[in-house]
Each structure stands twice: as C-alpha cells, then as structure tokens.
Image (cartoon, rainbow, N blue to C red; front, side):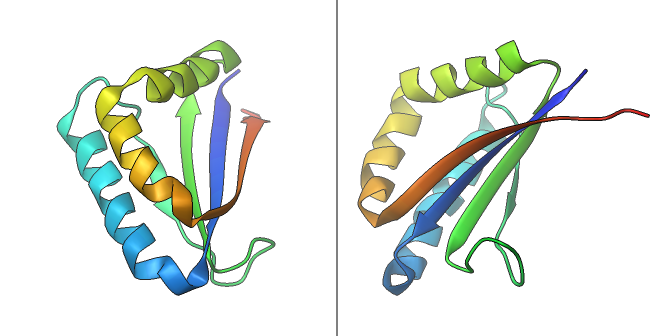
Length: 103
C-alpha cells in the first residue's frame, strides 16, 4: 500500500513574495537532483487551510520511505541552507501521512 506524505507550511502572509522565491529554489533543487523526491506543490484557494499555506506532497511506496525522505531532507546540506533562509517566515508546519486506497 502506497503512502502520500503532505507537508503543509503556513507562512507569514506579509512575506509571501520572499517565501515563494525561496520555494522556487527548493523546486529547482528538486528538479536538478536525481536523489530528491519529486513532489507536487500547491497553494489553497478555497480549502481547510488558509491561503498563506504551501503544500508539498509526494507519493511513496511505504511509510518507511516517506520517513526516509524526511531524514534525507534533514541531512542534505543544500536543503538545510535553503530551509534556514525560509524558516523565519513559518507560522506553522504540519506533516501528514495518508494511505492510498487502491481499490
């Protein structure tokens, strides 16, 4: 059974331009490196989350590989350098895991 991991980052709405510029750099890093999980980025328009939220989600074959991706992000120097720049804009971060029902 596959797992979808969703990372929701609520950011300071007065810093949206700066936050999104850094998020673009994350997307470029993800695209440039074969070892990065390839996720999808979304921003709510009408949803349970406020509009000043960035959602990154990715499907993994199992829960272990989803947790492995979090460990990978924490141990990657390029990711950590961008994260340190983006972290001051965070208001809240949530990580959710969903089992994908394949029936």
